[in-house]
Image (cartoon, rainbow over all chains, first blue to last red; front, side, top):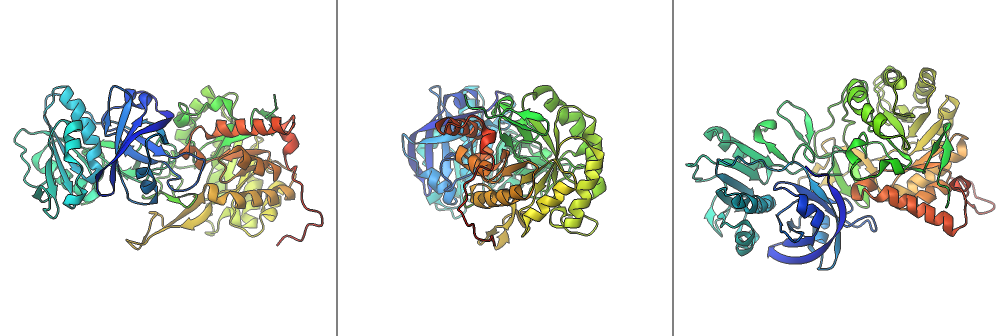
Length: 259
Length: 312
């Protein structure tokens, strides 16, 4: 894997794709050239002012193209992410990346991505790359309600597939969770990214059906490069391990899952 | 060209800018992003006698103008530090000076780490983290004058290497603690460690940090750090290393004018790993602009008002 780089990246585009959620495109050729699906960047506004986000925030890479362009799904959760959703074309963001361990796909097995909320982001990139390699990819994508569902045209454009949609309240797509009523007949390799309860449900599903599962985890992060040890998760052997450098993608069997 | 070097502890520091303990791992983690051999040096993550597992998450969170952390001093312990981490420092850092940050639950713990590393190569000296509980009586070494004096006296007897004590800001009279360290044989002081703090998630009505409380760092603590550095430096004749919220050359110069001979950059690294080199270049620009030949001429060169009122 290539070493991460630090660079100022120009904002090329910022469009609303769901409630409180933007698709932000950056010009970042070094990161784009080196990135693999599942990796992330630290995105921040630099040291010149201390308004939130003072610390950079981790974002999974959602897309890259051959012209050095990267795409990110940025959803507003607090003051820091609110400011990031407000960037305009021409603004610059400080980017550190690409960071972390990517997904590892077996070429001989179909890929089933299980996405909750902004957990969809890495699977846009996974799907684009895996389909290019000739892999069959399906995405099951869940949200709490229909107004939070991302622009499905954009998803299709980037991922190359139409996601199977689930919402908790049934206001768009099928009512239910991403793990409900899944067709596992082709015994796919499972990839999951989303809130903790969803990941735990995916672990139960994978265990029950004896399917391989990789998860992308999210924890508060400080540095993104393994120095601060802020972003730990509990390993299967009971040690706190760093999600930034040992993850964010783990084989589900590498972690302890509280059930 | 302006001279940024400082001669301290019997060696030359090519620049006053060091990386603070706990923010730069064991150096290797930042080797791709920071030209370590161009800066003054670094202070390693704390090393304890036994490995420490650390605290449950969340361990870090943003606060206004900074961050709060409760990592729990997770580290690989003395044996693995010596066999796995120190060799990298020894092989890769020659111009940058390395201090090893040491932490312990007891005077014996600290002593065992210092003795266990003293004969090794690849570092200059020790920075002693006294912002941790003494299991003997539950108080913190850094807030108990007797315990602090005993600790520094013991460590002094175990090593001839530079011994720097990292002071906690959590005392009303930092000058007294600074003098205790000097009298017990410390070669220098680092001022300051993080401020104790707490952050609450009001939606969940729970502390944000897994450890409930943690240490606050970043630009928000800069004025407190400058003040406490000024007080500590005025109280002793040994060098002081200023720490707390530095993100620019001006910030670093505030510490230097307050009496610091060197500075450490911590939280700012997470925001921008280019910060240490930028701070260095800013200081150099300041020296040129003001016609100052040597950085050492600025240490403590603060003009105070005449008839200074009694400090409260």
